[in-house]
Structures are given as structure tokens and as C-alpha cells.
Image (cartoon, rainbow, N blue to C red; front, top):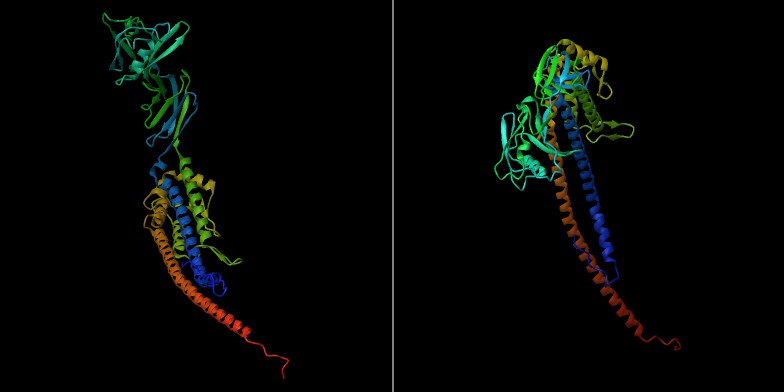
Amino acid sequence: MVQITAGGIGSGLDINGLVSQLVAAERAPTENRLNQREARVQARLSAYGGLKAVLESFQESLAKLTDVNTYSKRRVVSSNTDVFTASAGASAVAGNYTVEVQQLATQHKIASAAYASSSTEVGTGTLDITVNGSSFSVDIDSDSDTLAGIRDAINSAEDNVGVTASIVQDQDGSHLVLTSDSTGVDNKISVAVTTDGGDTGDLTQLAFDPMAGSNPMSEQVVAKDAIVVVDGFTQNSASNSVTNIIDGVTLDLVSADLGNEHTLTVSQDKNSVRSAVEGFVTAYNSLRGTLNDLTAFDPETQTAGLLQGDSTTLRIASQLRQEIIASVAAVDDDVDTLVELGITSNVSDGKLNIDDATLTAALNDHFSDFKTLFAGDDGFAVRLDAVVENYTRVGGLLDNRTDGLQTQIDRINSERDALDRRIAVIQQRFIQQFTALDTLLGELNTTSNFLSSQLASLPRPNSGNS
């Protein structure tokens, strides 16, 4: 916009004020109209954004129902979790089992004799450490021949096959302790020592042979396999996580309870399916509430929702309603509609209600049908997801509508630019006109002042003469 610089020097006119008021009056009608149009378009853009967000949230709830794994989960209950816990996969067969944990698997642990401190020199040479048939060697020289140095050398060995060294303080001194990283009989530790004439002490005091009757190092914890009995069948396991006794079930042993049987119950996880159905209903009601608000009209206040009468929004609501009341052909006639699952629709607002008793009965009596009901090719969740995907996908119907609205915003901005250019021309014209007027008034004032001075200088008639 052209900057006003005229000041009414010749006439005293407030040219700046006059031009500003005239320009503002010229701009106001068009600018107000553009602002109102933009506000309406921005409101609709925001409404579409909110609608897309709630549609995507609804899709997330459908994802659980379209996932076939939702229907194959198993629920596992231990009668005594202080003794064992369990988990189960889809292949686990429902049933009850008796479980007795006779023994836990343990890690082999051996310890050296006592030394004065962790800085005491033990000796130099080579330690060959073997666990479950795999070995690694640790060279001990004069820089690492202390108890602490040997510990660090073992732990930092790049080819360490599964042994952790530590130092434990006892009343009689410091002990080097070697612990197998894995449980089970096969993971016993053996240590062979090689020295030469340069040994700074007696490194052979760290030797251990599990098959020998006596060793310089003592066995602190005997390596054991877990022993578990299920329905009278016994299984040994190197790990306390037992996977090979009941198909599809993992037993995690917590403590031994020799002579006492406890119960393991494996069942279909109906609660997981119920939770997915309830999540679907909650998300649908949130979507339905948004659609209702966007398309509502209040006759008392004469106010309409931001998308009231919008064809896209009305089409979404209609398509969702059609799918909700439809049936699924590939299941038992007793549960081929949502109503028969206890899910009904309110007449007033279209939201869904769940009758817990009816849903529970359907889960108990027709659980095998739920996968087809929701995740089958003709299932509710699959069909609803297809409807929503048409609107939410990149380049979908909602993107098309928002692109159209953004085009309107761009057009409004272009009209604003044109308005600025037109107003600049009008402002410049006003400046020129008022500047010319100011100049003319200045000239007239000058002429008037001249005439006044000339008239004042004329001699006045002598009023005393006859």
C-alpha cells in the first residue's frame, strides 16, 4: 500500500486523515467479505481434520477385531504363582493339568580358596575355561595376576563362552567366584591351568575338574536341571522356562515344591475378544457423536453444525449405519447380526449399547464364530474398515474435500492480493486529488490575502465633506 505523505501544507487540510478514512471505507466491504469466507472455509477444514482423526481412531479399534490372532489367544491360570507361572500360544489345547515342581534348574558356581585381598597376587599362566563343550583361554601375566586382575581378564575376554567372574568377601578373606551364565547340568564349569617356570605364584589353585574327587576350587552351587511333573509325566529341563512338556505352553518355574501338585488351567481367551468388541463399540460411539455434532441443526438457536448438509459426511454416516445393521452370511443364524451379540443401536443418536449378558452368552456358546463374524472376508470389522479406508487413505475422499477447501483459501488469498493492489491505486489517486485541492486552496488563500491587503490600503472617503 502507498504511504501517505501529504500534509495539507497549503490549506491546513488533514490530508493523511482524510485519505486513510476514505481508503478504509473503500477496503472494508471487500475485506470483511473475504474474512468471512475464509473463516467459514477454515472452520470446515478444521471440521474435516477432526472427522478424519476420529475415523482413524475408529480404524485402530477395528484393527484388533480384524487381527485373526485376537481369536487364538489363550488364557493361562496357575493355582499357585509362587511355584510356577505360565503362558500359552495359539496351538495350546484348552484343558486342566496338574503340575509338580520337584526341582529348579541352577547355575553352576565354583569358588577359590581365600586370599588376603583382591589385590593379592595369585600367579601367571593360562586358564582354559570350558562350559557345555565350548572353551576359551585367558592369559594371565604379571600385570593381571591379582585376584581382581584375573576377574577382569575373564569378564573382558571377547570369546567368553558364558562365565562371569566376581570377588566375594568372606570372614576368611577374598574369594574368586566363577558362575555359569546358564542353568542346567550341561553348563558345568571346568578350569584347566597351564603354568611355566615363570609363574609368579601358584595359578593351579584356580583349577577345577567336575569329574575329579577333589579340586583346589570348591563347588558352591551344584549345577542342576529343573524337574517338573505334569499329569504324571516327568520332564528335565536345563532352564526354568520349560517349553517341551505341554504343546504351546511355557511353564516358568519359580520355586520347588516337592510332593505337592498344583493346577494349570488353559482356556480360550474370551476376555481378549470381549475387550476388542467393547473397544470397537466405544470408538464407534465417539465417531457417531462427532458425526452428530457436525451435521446437527438446533431449531431453537438456528445454529447448524459445521458440516450440516455436507454430502460426504452424510454419506459416511449412512454407510456406517448400513454395515452396523447388516448380517454375516458365513456364521450360525443365531449370531449373524450385532443385535444377536447384544449390541443394539439407539434410535435417537445412532450410538451403540452392549447387553453384557447377551454378549457373554454369545461368547460362551458361539466363540468359534467370532473370528468369522468380525475378521472374515464378510465380517463386520473388515467391511467397516473398508468403508472408513475410502475416506482416510492418502488421496481418499476426505483428502479430496480438504484439497478443494485449500484451493478456496488460495483463491481468497489471491483476491486479497488483488484488493491490496486496487486499494494502492485508489489511495494514490486520493493523495493526488487532495494534494491538488490543497494546492488550489493555498493559491486561493494567497489571492484572498493579497486582495484583502490591497483593499485595506485604499484611502477611505472623508466623511466630513459634503
